[in-house]
Amino acid sequence: MRVLRRVLFFLLIVPLVFLALVVGAWAVDLRRSDGEVMRNVTVGGTDVGGRSQQELRDDVAVLAARWAAVPFEIRTEGGSFTATLADLGLTVDEAATADAAMGLGRDGALPSRPFTWLRSLVGEEDAPVELAVDEPALREAIGRLDTTREPPTEPAIEVAGGQMVAVGGKAGEGIDGGDLVEALEDAVAEERTSVTVDRTSIEPRFSLGDAERLAARAEELAGRQMSVAVGQAEALVPAETLRSWMQAEPADAGLLLRLDTEKVQADLEALFPEAGDPPKDASFNVEGDRVTIVPGASGTACCAENAGALVLEALETRTRPVRVPLRDVDPARSTEEAEKLGIVEKVGEFTTNFAAGQSRVTNIHRISDITRGVVIDPGGTFSVNEFVGERTREKGFVPAGVIYNGEFTEDVGGGISQYATTLFNAAFFAGLEFEEYQSHSIYISRYPYGREATLSFPSPDLKIKNPSPHGVLIWPTYTPSSVTISIYSTRWATGEQTAQFRSASGRCTSVRTVRTRTFTDGRTENDEVFARYRPSEGVNC
Image 1 (cartoon, rainbow, N blue to C red):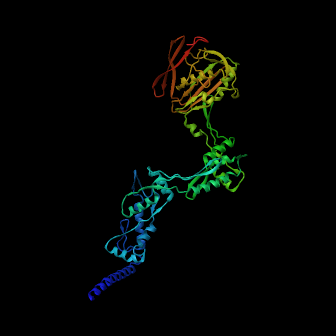
Image 2: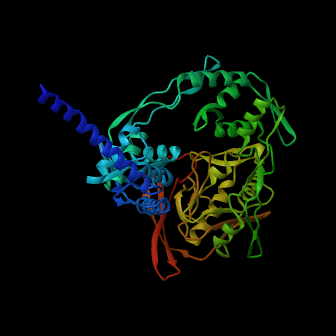
Image 3: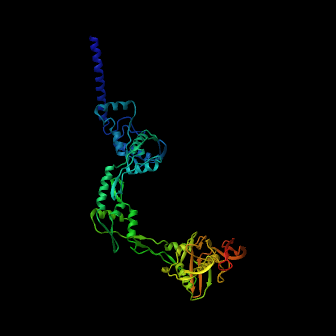
């Protein structure tokens, strides 16, 4: 019995003595290492045991700099991608990491601290690496880099039944940001450059309740009459229009009410089409044969980019009317752009004559006025019909003779085919190209045989292409008995008629005219234009 008591005594006393010795040694060592990291502690593979607080902070700073630009392979089901901590909006939290290292053996539950210290005597203790997280940047980076991700759909608001209602969100699937941060913290602590993160369900950040509250607020605001003033004009915006502008915007501050800026812009432009002063494109003028540039100027129009924000603020504060500033509008062609076109010299010209005083002369003069100053950009095409549109009395055209289906008749705009033929020939000799043209069905002696064009709306059209690297300026002028079309650019090619062939086409005559273009680099190139003529009015081919 005594032996059993002694055994029990030793079984109880020895552990207590051992525990007392451990606690005592820990307390002594803790006191001796006051202000220093406990022995055998590592942070991210760096031994920081015995380091002072300042030395520890220096070590962690080096650690943070070393890992900032290290590329990590991030593996997940279905794919992987590579990114640095900086790419993901992460940085080593130097203060938190240093505190964690300094706290080993000092922090945590009191009974466990001596045993943490005891383990450090026989092996390394890895202090955790803490990462600071920029949540918006992390979300954006994961959405951009994880191509297998199915992002959640956040709840929204929309118009239904004439009022604003909430639409629930939908969960997605992909990498969870918190899981990725934990995996990277472990990787840095263990000096690894690859991590594996499971795909998981990603819930929307906001709830249906959030959207319902926002929809109720949007409906309340839409019920308030809103008038908008732009310049001197003012108009009431209907409630249905206000509702169509409203949308939910997920943000760090919550699910916010925003207005669709593009729709606000488009609707306000429709309400205030005359607001502002239109910009003035840089243009060209010709005096004699000298080309000058008329400078362009910026203009204004409805409405400024912050129109949506101003309207929403006015709805909130009940400001009436909300004054929306105009926006600046640049000209389609600036003075600098006009200078770069290289329109500096006459490269082609043609004149046709007519009897003065006829009604057709009015139309020839009118279309000349409309197209004077047209610029064909390098590689661009000029369509007479697209530019001028249908010839109407409202545009200044009058009835005159035309040829329709091989018969002479009369229509508004008659006679403008003489303009078309003149332009056709000016382009022919300037070395330009033709995307679309059609000759008269009956030859008229005032035009070059086989080398002319007619016009009607919407077809046939005359389309001239500029294949050169320079801009091309069309400049029609006229007298009471003639029209001249001059073409200005930088000389690139010169055209001349070098042959012509006729052949029977039933009772009609087909004409093939050969043009030789000579380029400024000495090259020559042949192409052809075509015409087909009926022998007389009413005769079909």
